[in-house]
Image 1 (cartoon, rainbow, N blue to C red):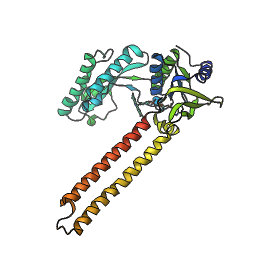
Image 2 (cartoon, protein in one colour):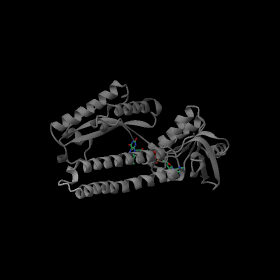
Image 3 (cartoon, rainbow, N blue to C red):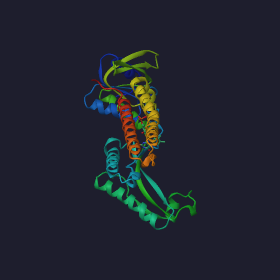
Image 4 (spheres, rainbow, N blue to C red):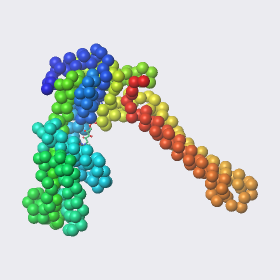
Amino acid sequence: MTALSPAGRREAIARMAENELDILVIGGGVVGAGSALDAVTRGLTTAIVEERDWASGTSSRSSKLIHGGLRYLEMLDFGLVREALRERGLLLDRIAPHLVRPVPFLYPLQHRVWERGYAGAGVALYDAMAITSGTAHGLHHHRHLTRGQALREAPCLRKDALTGAIQYWDAQMDDARFTMTVVRTAASFGALAANRAKVTGFLRQGERVTGARVTDLETGEEFEVRARQVINATGVWTDDTQAMADTRGHAWEIFGIIVGATLPFVIVATVALGILRATIAGDAVIAFKDFNVAFQAIIGLFTYTIAVVIASRLYQWIGVRVKERG
Ligand SMILES: Cc1cc2nc3c(=O)[nH]c(=O)nc-3n(C[C@H](O)[C@H](O)[C@H](O)COP(=O)(O)OP(=O)(O)OC[C@H]3O[C@@H](n4cnc5c(N)ncnc54)[C@H](O)[C@@H]3O)c2cc1C
């Protein structure tokens, strides 16, 4: 493993400013750290910069669970649960057994029969999926508890607040330490990692982002990092980072707002004109019973929907990518 030392940081900054990289990751939370590790282990030259400290954002403020997604079973999203259980097993058994540990949960039951059956079936399925995918190592299976047993597990619960409970197991980790370990592992594979390095702007060639301007907050020096791909992994700061990168996004956003704001008026005007025409023509029945008016209203609504969908998709497409070459 590579130490994330001051000397290592200085060297990383010097090297990331030297040659064009394949990947520059902005943001040293778990998403940025994971992206950097993924990229560098694919043989790509990679750098990761973090404004504050590793995991100083959301990645040190989570509930710290490595869970298999029990609640997604209620949404019948079996694929997601299977994937999460597989990841949980990998983390527990192979990737980070020193950071991830089993943790018991108590699911209190308030209704006597149906709730035990309903919740019990869900938890049993959860355990069964973990067992059949071979990922339940080290975790106990769930068990049904009477009220007395539940109160022995959690004596602070009010006696009259539950009729019993189900105990099941998931996993928990130290999220900040976990993230920092991922950064360190990425660095050990050759990723250039610098914390206290803030992205203040982007380098561009035409519409394309070709790197970033970074300020070393330790020295105050500014340097440029050129990269074929820039990954924006700044979590809740994504909009701020995106705003530095994407002036076109704003143009499309404004376009979307204009489309959204004006088209209802266009439809109303179209329908009103149809009614007026029908009235002038002396039709006895106007408004939506009139075929022409109804037809115009449908065409108007259709046009409105299509225009809004196209506008929002364009904005989404432009907004989601930080930038790609070519
Ligand atoms: C209350 C809560 C509980 C949660 N519980 C769980 C849980 O139990 N299990 C679970 O798996 N997930 C949980 N999550 C979700 C998980 O915490 C987040 O999905 C994850 O931490 C997001 O990581 P991130 O890397 O995207 O963002 P962050 O960790 O916020 O990382 C973004 C980083 O970008 C940096 N940055 C911003 N701007 C710049 C810039 N200009 N230049 C350089 N760096 C910059 C920031 O300093 C920050 O460190 C929880 C989330 C919340 C809010």
